[in-house]
Amino acid sequence: MSETTTSPPRVSRAISLKARLGIGAALLGGGTLLTAVILFLGLNAVAERLDTALASETRMARYATLSQQAATFLVITTEMVQSGQTPEVRRDRIAPVIDRLRNTFLDLHADTEAAVTQAQEIGLDAQSRYATQSLGLARMQAMLDNTEAGLSTETNDPDELRAYIDSFASSFDPLLSQAVNNEILFRNTILNGIDELRQRLGLIALAIAVVTVGSVAAFYFGLIRPQFARLDRLREAAHRIGQEDFAVALPVTRMDEIGQISTETNRMAAALSDRQQQVQAEWARLNETIRQKTEELQSANATLEEIDHNRRRFFADVSHELRTPLTVILMEAQIGKKSTPEAAAAFTTIEARAARLNRRIDDLLRIARSDSGQLHLDVDNVPLPDLMAKVVEEIQAETENAGLDLQIGSVPDAEVLCDPNWVRQVIVGLIRNAIRHARAGGVVRLRVEAGTKDITLQIIDHGPGIAQEQLSRIFDRFAQGKNPDAALGFGLGLALARWVIEEQGGTILAESPLPATLRPEGVTGTVISVGLPNASR
Image (cartoon, rainbow, N blue to C red; front, side, top):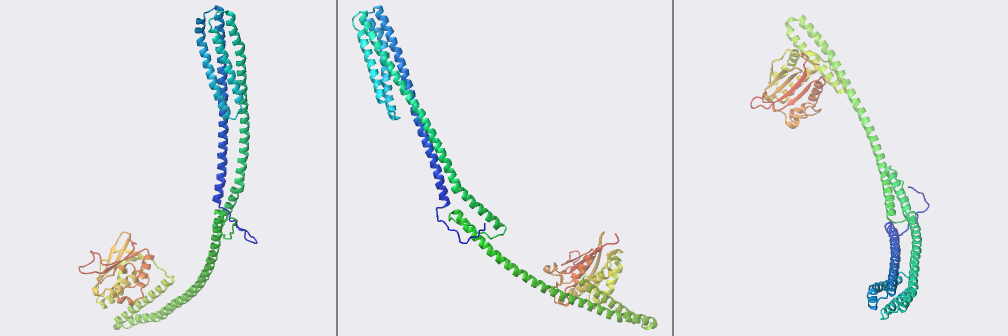
């Protein structure tokens, strides 16, 4: 967009946009990775505490087992004392129970050592508590050993044996209860620690969410959104340039990637503006040149129109001046032919020549009118024999003087639709062309072919023919052959002939050499075919 400022904006040489986007993405990625690590460590800590709580539950189950085994031991020993069993029987019966108790004590010692290790790993200060547990277990195990030893003596005194049993029962149960209570306290401590850890993890997650939202907002509003604004300006500038509005001056405050594109866009717009001014200047010069040439052409056309007008007036004046004395000559010839019979033949010749000259004047006027666009064709149904007779009458003397044999084929009794004067002039002109260019052939033939729609008049000569490169353009205006005799005319005859015939709905064609059906041996020749509408159909 175009902005008018008193001084160019200061261009910052900061790090590139690509680098800033990379740093922002790295920070967001690092925050995400840190969040994942914190969550992993928190979940790992929770899992360790849960494992410790489960181990505590396992030890409580073992204490319950130990309590059941101790109760079984008391029941068995009491029953044996009351029944007065011998020492051997007493030892045999209490041995399996004592073995189970000792195995349970071994498991509890192992569990206690593992609990001390777990407490150290998760940061719980429980070594003294588990030392107390170990001491209590040792005392209970010592009491079991003493009771076993007392029951294994050789005495059968019930009071003495009962004293051992009562001592075990009164001492073992408080120690076991104390151990179970300590384990319950430890388990509750672990569960409380899990709850505290959960709360801390919740606070950490909330803090991470706040930091993440703030980082994303800062990343968007501080970096992404300003670049969108710059890109929007670039898009608007491109649209204006597409509309041929090159007054574009994008602000360049940073030489990052977008800043470089903005700089190049400004340079491109300036170059296009300069080019537009150059094109406009060239266009103005071209219009001025066209105006001048148009004026020159109009002046030349005016001159040509004046020349053409003078030429047509000259033809009209000449025709008028010639027609008046010709009329007098015709009248005098007719009077002389009637008044002087002995000179009738001479007056007849004078009359015929004057009539022919009158037709030449008519032809001259037609040519003038055709060039001026004022030609009028009087199309009518014309008997073909009459038309051919007039052609022969007009051209016979010229062919004889040229030493040519004019051969006329059979003429059908038909009518053609044409202007007889113009068609006569065209046929006579084509025969004159044969006299001029094909005199060496010695023959000119007129051949007529009647079709259902057209009647074709063919003028055939036995001359040297027409070169193929000239054959395609002989009907063009001002076209002349390479024969030296061609220089005797202006090149208007065949072009005018084609115009006259085509204006009457006919055709005119030239073919050289002659077709095989029309060509004698050793002859090249040319045939010009004039087709006219058949009025007899």
